[in-house]
Length: 232
Image (tube, rainbow, N blue to C red; front, side):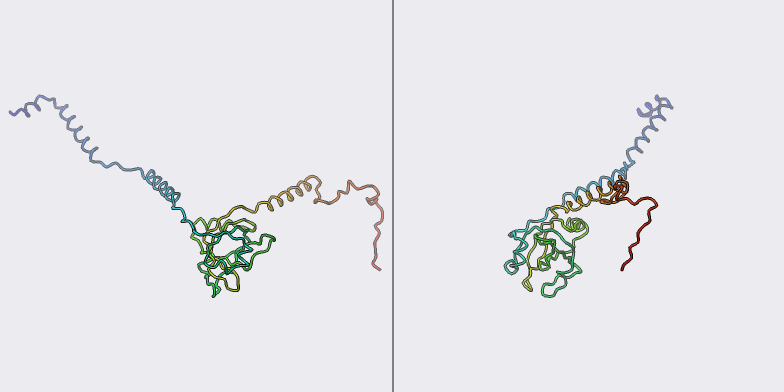
């Protein structure tokens, strides 16, 4: 009898079966792949996507930018042809004024246009034509454009590419919102709140006289006939 056979013969039968069972279980555990949690994997991919969006490359700087006033730009359009300019102004409204004009073509299919206000009055510059490529939905300019309203102060960086009719036609390269037109809204809210308070207290509109507070001479007596005035 060989040495290995003698060793097996000396081991109890129950212990031998236990050893065989443990050996098979260890083989199964080692062969089974470890499955990743799908929810954890999806969350990690989402976080990676957000970090990639946050780390989007900064916009390249625009060189040789000249600071101008809107009045100078409107009066001396030919002096700025081919130059990068920068100015601050108040937004007025979107318009198609700078689009689809053959001498300075910017098609309305791929461009938008807007008007800015004169500094001395709430009157838009019709002579300053501002054309801007329609941004994609995820571009920062898209968020700025959708939030603009009359009176918001903006910073415009652009390039004057033409001056037909002695008027500047500007390609808007960058648009930044500097401040919101909140003062008018705050004043309107104050007026409306004060008028609503007066209505709550007296039940009458602001400025109306309460009959109870009128002097006896100014109030009509009960049962007194009402005089009718006939037009002669």
